[in-house]
Length: 451
Image (cartoon, rainbow, N blue to C red; front, top):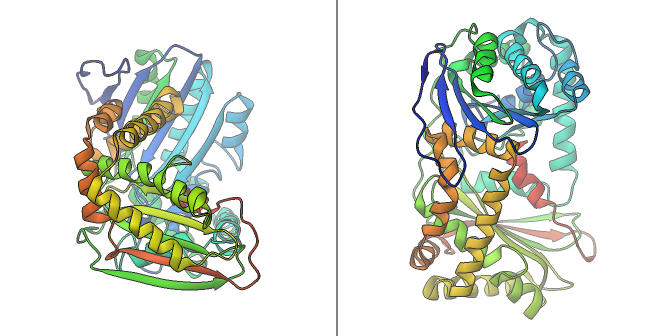
């Protein structure tokens, strides 16, 4: 064991301790004996922002390849062993990281740790042309199902490309392009693994009904002999001006069920007090059926069937405020846009009412507590704050930071950022007659920043 940190005072009844292996692997442990389960979460500091021109989608493709076997586990064995032991597992890719996670009966924790260590240390022994072609086809089919062949499926890619200029590391989404997926070679994948899938580029968290001393002994046993790698280059700089400086706009004519107005606003980086204030602003404005925009557009004016405003938090680039409105009947986009701008201007002047502020803080508090209350959610947040902000303990005080934000800070960030000259706008016009649209698929692809 390389080093063990002194744990800070308990925060909100939750605690976590940090440890380092000699090879650079950062380990975070959090005991929780309420239920006999344990969560293992492994974050690698690699996402689509690390990709280079003509090789987009490689981080996401590699997420799939990690489930294709390793030296001691053949084919689909990772799934079979975890599920056979009563556990669940998956992996996701975002702009900023790739993660893998298992939730196991507590007595099966060692199995999950061994499996993660085996593929970290020996995936190249099993990576061949057959597995590469198999998963290339899987990812291409996922792109068709989630982006290319569903209503509004292109929105996330289009707005991201508009909000982040060409050449910016966040200009393309994690799913990648079909052409780049076709062009990726087996050697590209092998080099990607050598560069990024090293213990000194990862954080491992274990949360739940664990014995810390025994858990650390298992981690040292299975991960300790894996060598580190020093060849990783830092991601390209994602810095941009606070304001876009103009309204970017695109009209898309597609076979969609109804007209839609979508917009992406450039907002503060995640990990800042301003980002928490922005989150509260968007929650008051468009977070659910009690929000201002829903009440105005859906209930009062009956221009829309859905209206939402949410925050895509990003640490290495400006976050995005994501507006999504689906029209009702023959409602015109111009009327919806005018109503949205009127509500945003009023909010920028007046700020949230006491009731709106209380409701928004309660909503975000509940969402945070829901994540921290489960062993898998807490394991993920501990990894997130360790990888992106250097301190897993920040996960345990996130709720308090949201509750400390003032109404004036919420008003100020809205006034500064939720402006017409700071947004990319996407308008969908159907090529077929409008029908009532009762489901929102755009949120799937916003979350798909993590798939």
